[in-house]
Length: 326
Image (cartoon, rainbow, N blue to C red; front, side, top):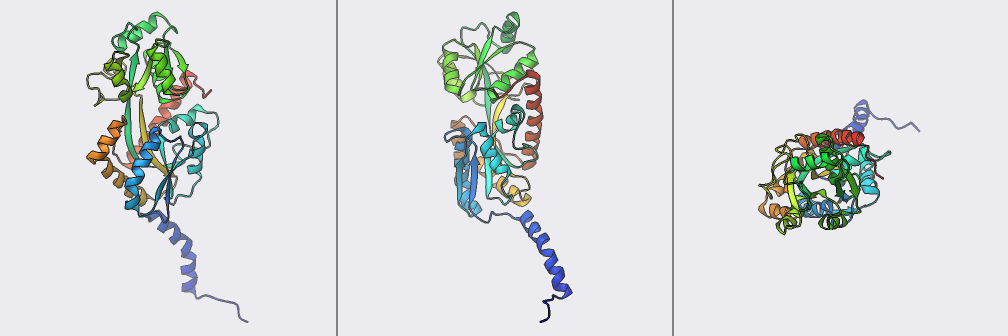
């Protein structure tokens, strides 16, 4: 029996198949099966709320079921690692807050690279953080707070929801910039931290603006300055830290959708456009603002730049302040 042979043209076509497969993958605009948005945190958290809202919008547009999978544990490392190892076929995505960038420098061993290990798809929202104090603290603005801290090095303490949280690192950056010594009191979550702030057991902390506003209106706290680049839409009368004389102290929350490294550029642009259109809808704006989130539509390239900048910025703060995950 003669061995099976292929004509030269057939051999050439056969040799091209792997290349064509990769090319088709690179150009795909739709996932070829159900999509899972991994949330590396528990249900009810900011990224979980966003993932569930976004999944309802994406499902009919992608033509596939879109489900949310909460894979909490190890400060978000477990779910994040799972996505880093997933195939870049568009079927596994993740919703992340900016803590995933911070964690890369906070822990000694992190099973992912926040810049090289993922494909940024869409920055969805930002949330402003505001520096607040108990009303009995003798400071009406950020400058007075700094002067108070300089007069008593280490005596002024502040709360946070835990080591390495945006609230903690934001205050650490503020202290480095202002050249003051503050004492950090970490808590397990925001609720006990706020409770001790209201009870005057700690002097200050960074809070999300939408959390701080009702407490300020009731006279339970005083808002000194917001940690974002511009004044908060929700609290336009509160100056920024830059306006108070502390430029470069940008401390806020952001949430974005990412996929594994190597995700199709055409699929990324497609999802980005779908989500940006969703973020512009009045109903979406209202729903997000009720959660203290400001819709922030942008390009995948701009989101990638934000991830890179934040990675370097927070790595520097963590090193200078000697912050660890413990």
